[in-house]
Image 1 (cartoon, rainbow, N blue to C red):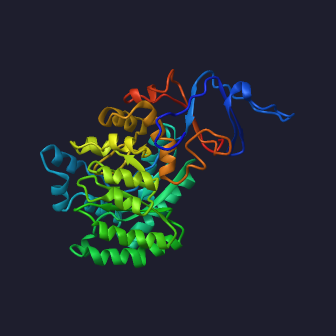
Image 2 (cartoon, rainbow, N blue to C red; image 1 turned 120 degrees about the horizontal axis):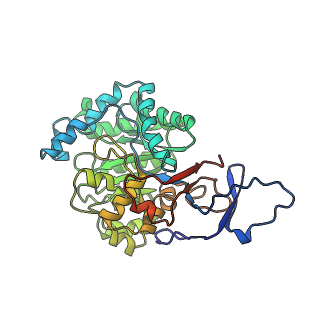
Image 3 (cartoon, rainbow, N blue to C red; image 1 turned 90 degrees about the vertical axis):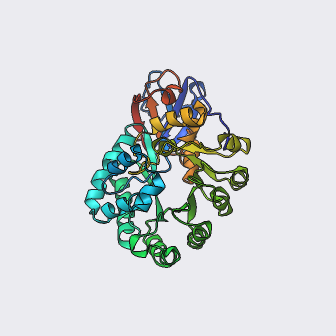
Length: 389
């Protein structure tokens, strides 16, 4: 199916052939090619539903500590901006992350990763951004790579150095952007730790002009970009992301039609993050109607992070996207498979069940696909297959 279309494509009485790590056939069982004398191991799924492996395309899975105390502050009426101004928010996680060892970061992140994998997730994006200095950003990205070695899952690493201004450079965002673009990013990219580059474009973080400098540096290094865009205000983040042919623009609560049009032309995926919308009790939903009207591909992710979306269930994220943003069942399922793969630039290998793609899929104890979006706090996964294993 084309990006931005709602259909997911259903094959009843279907079959797949897997050789090594890849699918060699997927379609109706009656169209299964002959074995040509090759012995096949047959696995009968007994009428269960099979989907592509789920893809969580926006997470901040690696960090130190937690922000439960700030959650209490919000319950008493403090805003996200007020907490950040008081030294909380991202900077409180920065302090805990800088003081954590690589083993401590990995052990904590594995608990969160295992929860996602238990729901059929076979690929995940993990951002840095809680170090904001070269040493800690490197440690976070190295830890992300290590998670991919310790678990059967594909990990896409994203450098989010432009997440906040570090306390030692408070009030001097331009100098920090200079350090980021001239030292941190080139060094980490040269070490093979960066698959893509992200930034937080907001009044409490970085301006569009500053993000453009980061994206110019990323582009010069041959790296694709993505953007935290228009979450708290409309700074034209969607248009900025499209200008750089970004893989994705994420959040988008305050995006306008010009951004939707630009993203459609650029092929930039809109990643909706209902966990943060719910947790922050936001009142302005993303402009789903505009995204649909302009044929923008829509993905759904957990945004798993300690401050604004401590969510480790992609199934619950789908339910939230349906109930809060009025996405259809097909949009939620495509948004956590096909379109999420597109948001990682991995659509050639994962996201759909097709010959030539990696054999990443999930087998479910369900009677119809809507159950994956409808249920709350229930996991119907029967088995999870990653690269044929």
